[in-house]
Length: 486
Image (tube, rainbow, N blue to C red):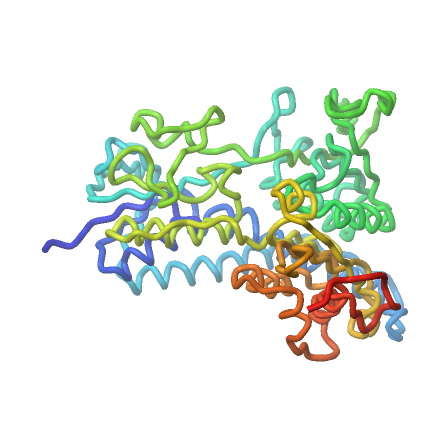
């Protein structure tokens, strides 16, 4: 039997992982990428933003030195040239690692822009006049997404910025307005505030991080902590007009969003800022790369539609990652899992992609993380639900660290105690959430979690303490009212 040939279009966390898995299963693999290996996650998203956040966290820690008993004289400031150098070094290191792995599996990497001619042929432009036809038996589309540009607010790279362009700033703006109080906007808000900018966040909804999967109380705590940091918040509002002045500033007129309650509409107001960062979502690449001509089913916004095996409506063509849109959860680790599923199914497997237990992390300060259902979602799903929260300030480790903001919240079924959701806001929430993911995955109850010994002093004790609270027998909180009993 001849070796199956697989072409992967796009080398982000979905594409390059799909390439690796198909090669592991014995396929002859070609991966096509027009930019750098690693896609948005490595080059413009997860990794560069966390690299900048590491600098922001270091600045925050140094400013807290006096509270930790450390005497420091003089001022501190970020050196943006060095910050940018470190960002590029981290990206290069990880990209080289990916390249080495692909090489070890004899995966051919073709640099250029791919256009799908039919399910088994992709034309790659490798230069102004040069091109090559890649022939394969199976095609995995992983073309990703890019920053969404709003009508009337085109990105110019100087005054009105996309998230990609914000990563390249070599000078800190004195005043920065961020349009969009979602994940990306809030992460950038923390980073640039710590870098020394005066940050304003404008969000059309009435809360920050207005995602159904994010606990509303966590969003309130985040807003409170942002205000403590002097980040200005305008909720229920949007930008009605923005223009660059002759003085090189951006004059922004704010007004009520369409979602704002009519009895609470604020009057229009004008701000002048140095730069405006637009973070209102992502745009898919479903209109490019020959995807429309191939006849793939797409929704009204152009996102590619697939079944639970990641198969498109066209035989031998699979799709993974951001190109599937928000209905499939646009996260790097979801794309990675989709890549594994599509790869195995492309080579005859029968693996189903599950989206019910997906941990998510938001790298604000304090960090946020969630998995499973919120209390509101659990009630809507018909569960007899209870929710309990334990404050990080009650933990010895948090007090010792001097990092006490936030809470752990567990949503569970009232009678059985089965854990339905876990929501964290606090120090290292992104590292702790996976205990909750495993608990939900295995169908664990709050009793199981309460009876699991946790090391002391650790931040993970927040989940243990919260589980004890859910059983009605808390250890490090005053005696509660009636709770469930095992």
